[in-house]
Image 1 (tube, rainbow, N blue to C red):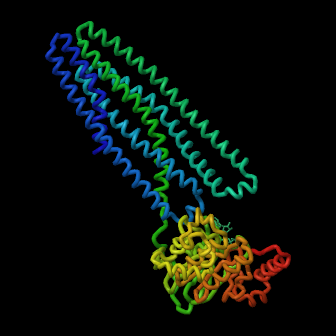
Image 2 (image 1 turned 90 degrees about the horizontal axis):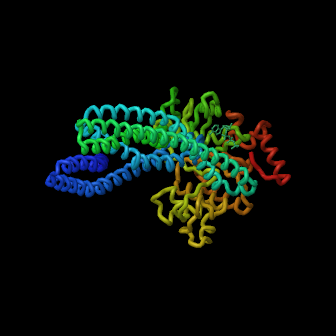
Image 3 (image 1 turned 135 degrees about the vertical axis):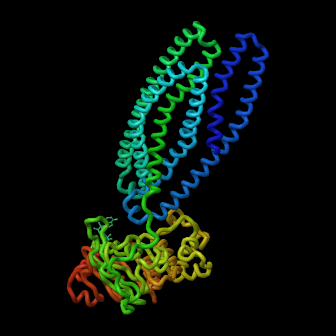
Length: 566
Ligand SMILES: Nc1ncnc2c1ncn2[C@@H]1O[C@H](COP(=O)(O)OP(=O)(O)OP(=O)(O)O)[C@@H](O)[C@H]1O
């Protein structure tokens, strides 16, 4: 409605002068002063009304566009939060950010600019054409045919310009990727002297961007020049034909001048139709990227039932993985027929050579990917019987790299359970051996942690993540042991925090240091996507297989002071 109002008024404004000219000139030619005044007052009134209404409609339209954009931004934000883990593992964060910022900006411009101008111009051209037909139909017909030719020339340029615009939008995304990487990886960049290399990469993409933009400008310039030529052919034609018709008494001077001015509006429509169409191509390229993101499939609320569900047997424990098979790609099998049970209160450790599949297994147990075959059962129910959020509610997770959000320490711990009191937050922090260092911070629990916890040490961040998991108090704990080396004191504090966390809880832990899982109830050795060995520490050592050789390597490294890592 607002768009229609704005366009209607914007469409009428350019027609006021051509119509005024006809009536005033004809009145002057007839020496009819009364008619001159009448026409002048009428047009003054119309112009005043249009001037008053235009800003009102314009404001309402702007407001409506802002609302639509806010809604779109919200939908994008919400949608990104629901995308499956695979999307984030396969798409650069800069690419998604570019779609949510640059491309969305282009869509907004289209709403505010191109679409509005296009509609107003079509309406102006349409009215002008009707008036022209009323004034002289032969003249109008000839000019409108010429107009179609002008539009044809303009649209010929649209396709290549759209292609260039799509490339520019994609390059903008790439540049944002580089920018996010240069900020997130700043330490590595400095230490490995990567700045020059990254700068060269950025320069090359910047050069490409400039080349594409110049190419687009060149295409636009050729288009303008073609339009300029056509406009003069048009004007010349009108002038000559109009003069002949006027001299022979077929039209008045007022009609001729009015026709010339109206024709300018129609020609403008045909010319601008092409160039606005070209502009819209850039906007459409941006919109396509936004809607591609919006159309990408969200994580389902629950995974489908397996084709061959397993009968529940209470003796199988609190969590079980039955015949779990998974691959990231169609033809690949990262995990093959994995089978294990975890009983109440047990600690199950997943160990194995690098790339064996431990983290993948953990991702499956967290519900980040669906199994290709087999089933995960938790507390006697298949995963498909839970929604994913119900399933995740029953699991506390301490990742390898503890992610802290910008906010206070208390807020970061409270993400474990949002309704926890400050006493409960403190109790969790004490259990995680985090309380003493928190109290040393300038504002205690209210200290801000900075971007991703930048103001805290690695060990301190881990202990906050452990406190968060303690607060969640879920039936099952999944743990990805941190590989980052901590100093001895910090490691001891983290270790003690973990022991408290694991005490009395059912735990599945990916372990990189075999020393930390010596006392696990069951150790599963994952090698090449399969469980190669399963048993206690002593049983596996006695077996003399993969576990024994990992153990020997770590023991040798420790002896040589080289640190650890499975
Ligand atoms: N997102 C992914 N997309 C495709 N392949 C992946 C992805 N993540 C891991 N892989 C592949 O799956 C296999 C198992 O990797 P995974 O990270 O589970 O091993 P891991 O045992 O945890 O290794 P590490 O101890 O080094 O962390 C590897 O071959 C790895 O390249």
